[in-house]
Length: 352
Image (cartoon, rainbow, N blue to C red; front, side, top):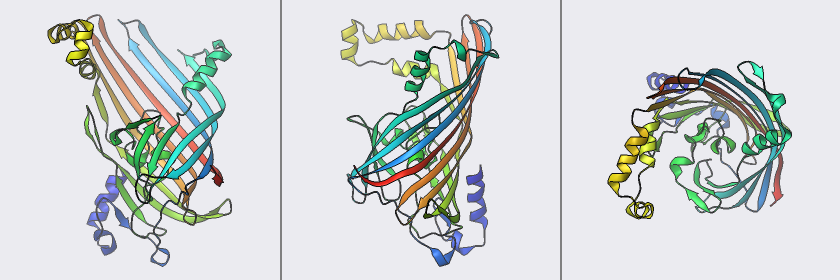
């Protein structure tokens, strides 16, 4: 709620500098003696190199007395790797196209317990390698504007809708792991000149197909200037708020089971037979999931001279529930997940 409270406070403030600006945008410009417009300055035909670490923990409590029993599971893991951003000219004026590649250099299964008993020792080397591969980051291409807004996403040769790419905007958390593209490209900057003490809010709300509008905002603060690895950087901290998500899985499944006439013909079915099959499959079943992003915070060191992020750290905590009702019995699952990710620039401006 931090960002929402700040918005209300700013709208009620007597500070003319804040009240003359858009409520979802710049709230305070900061130190008037050092105002400057912050923009990204990725150079085409170069490559940026980052090293990253990712630590994640997940705890699950299951209570399915009529559906196979109950129990709990806890897992913690760490990952390290290298990431390269290969830069090319973008599709819009002032934008660049960045292809992101990653290599996993280390994977550590810190713990894996079921009902309090460790099972990590029972996993083979192949099992651990498979877990590492499943958590590897895919190669993707994005088009990024000068202010940090992601305009386009391509996975392989396929362009994906913008509703799925912005990860609830610059908050950077479009999926339960907390990993999304926007968290890897830094804050979305305001168009006005800012200095230390500046605050702004980005509306990250998204129209998600099948869900409607998901309300989300990220509040940024420029807290200081400092020296980091020989660079003068702005320290930008952020806090994001995303409304709770509730999903009717049965309704989602039913919508996924729709078919066009050609598909039905291929299966030798008509629309009535498909509807009958859906009722038989889903009759008497209810399954609902809920997600709450309890905390999403980040700190970024931005070099205004070179227009790049040189260090960033993101911390996120998410909790969720699943409730199931079937003809055979009912059950619930409660889980929580935390993620800490850190990235540091290792090479800048290297020929791609």
